[in-house]
Length: 152
Image 1 (cartoon, rainbow, N blue to C red):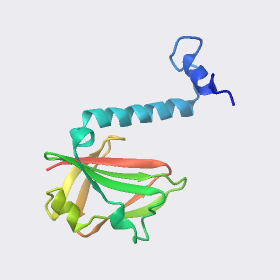
Image 2: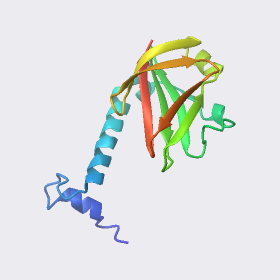
Image 3: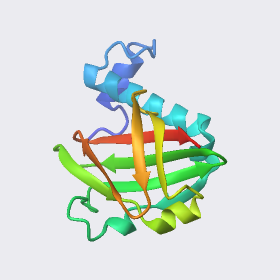
């Protein structure tokens, strides 16, 4: 294996122009996805410096949540919240995420709420109905994530 000159790096170099002209469509799509993710992490206060609450531990016995390939957590800064669910499996899987009451208390969320949320990765908007002690159901495409931001 040639660690000195990776073929993907050479494709980005494109004869010294560094414009990605030789890159595959998959590489360009991956670059765009990482740009979106990294910009969100820098721009969103809840992601950059907010409080963290792990939801994966609360789903260890949830048969609709695979704690080997799925991870979930909340971030919060001020009135801004981000609910993140990551899916590292190569196939689409119906998923449910248990939202423990302790998360709502720690994050100072009302025990029941319905909010408009924007997925920071896709820009899609949805209405989230969240309740302490309940679950939220979703279907995640293979190797994907959602980062729903909402403000209370």
